[in-house]
Length: 179
Image (cartoon, rainbow, N blue to C red; front, side):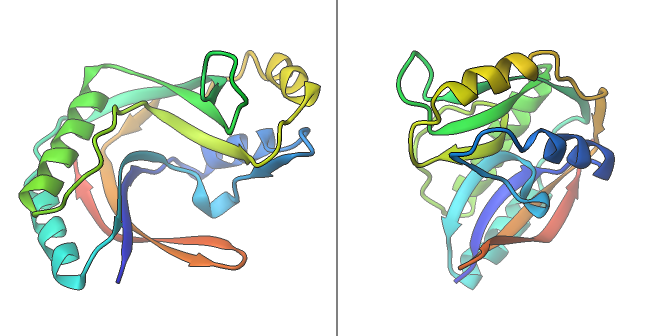
């Protein structure tokens, strides 16, 4: 059974820029180069038939192309609780949220049950199993000025994620053009 998510990828130059940030916190489990993306919706495990229905529904998405920029960093959860995820923030117009909503509607049209969750645009850089300590604050101060170039987003992808002992391997199952 395929394990799927819908995402936006970035150019190699930006991926290299993001991977360059992935150091300096010993307790961080940093993202690997082939895993950088902006998740629009995590789908999870589905049957082959459900995957085909989802592809069909995603082909009907008519969202507009848009620009975005990666700028600044933060952690989840927010509000002073122990951080579990370190991320780069995504700055975009309303088109990004509209695309995420259309992806949700396509998944529902394909008969998939989705966990209700608010879409929060971010790019995960690291996960923490244990409290990162003061290294996190120092890292965030050092990276406070991070920003990517403005990126034209013209497509999104249905991605299959295969879990292995060495981490997930992501393969694009199908790409979809934005209007």
